Image (tube, rainbow, N blue to C red; front, side, top):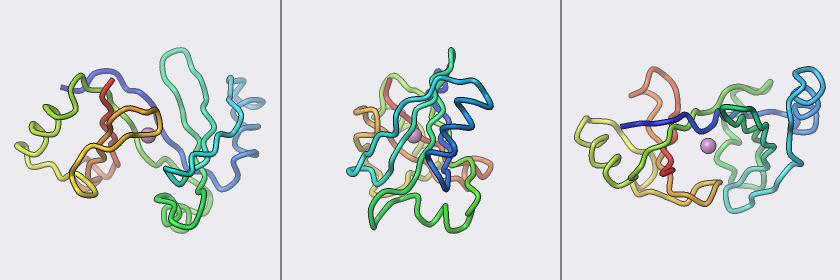
Length: 134
Ligand code: CO
């Protein structure tokens, strides 16, 4: 069902500092920070030949990643995102397999303007998984 990996998201305590590390230490191409108030994050995109890495920092009062940063003050890997062709079919399959979808269980428009679902980390070896319709 899942296809390509789309991105890995890393929550960072300091977006500018993390950008510099990816740009200078790792020699990657990084974007300018992009505020996404509707998602409660500011994001820097690291463009690699085969995948994106997204550096995330909380934005606003109700950021969905604020608690993660409290628990992991030095930052850490937050989620990985896999692509699917059809999010509704993916949802049916996942539910039939007993996987738990976070939130109200409905696909939402994600940070790339495409429908996404988040799956409970306890069902996937302790890793938060985002499913995105490619
Ligand atoms: Co994501």
